[in-house]
Image 1: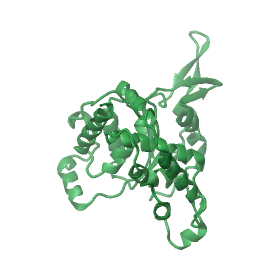
Image 2: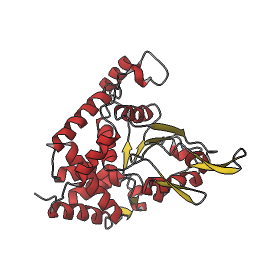
Image 3: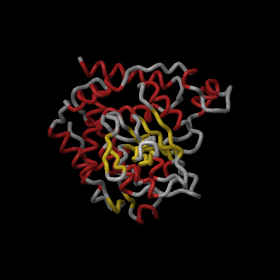
Image 4: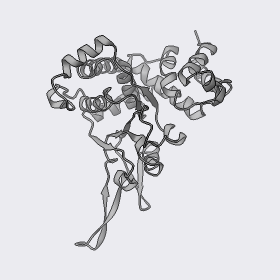
Length: 318
């Protein structure tokens, strides 16, 4: 059974990454869902909580080519996507491809670069192509962006615009670990002050991009029952009428929620989607797509709290 093979891969991936990343099971699961549903992920959390190491470990276990870009205020669009350089030997222009031409792009501290450079990623994330001097260049079939940002560092940051946030399938909140998890973390990595080297951690690849593409075909074949489709649509529409939200989610969010729920079902070894698949993905998929009303901020409500209210208000199919 094809879905059973995918479930076994998911379990093995969680176990292997769990040797390095302690206590981030939800983040690992959402990374897998995003990969097989061709989505991108934004990690938000304090410095030093393993966001970069998680992305690097994920790429190593799946044999994905990874390129890391440190986003800074002086980073230009050409530094990211590439540019045409004049070759004096051939008397012609040659395309020099930037780091976006990879399978997994790690965009570290993405909110530290100006909007002009942030916008250079819009086409790449949506269409899997980049345009250099009027010519379109396709990206890898496995292209995925994993971006990080630190919410507590406000000085020198540029908030991501709504159009940029909407390109991310999930916004994953990475918090501090629990005490026992932190004890294990210090036992594992407390002998060094630098980033652990992956070749020393035993993160041998479990599969490659060809296998991931096969999993995507399996996900595409999963069908949603009519009542599940209606549940997804009702949840999205409910965000547009909630008094605590100034702007609700778009129809694109409904499509993304349905696609992600299919991927989550396959990763659990099922050929059908259940309401719990939708519920489990609702907050990470919507928290960066809704805008709180001023009254909600006065009342001290956050996006997650409002989305929990929406989940409670919309009845799930039986």
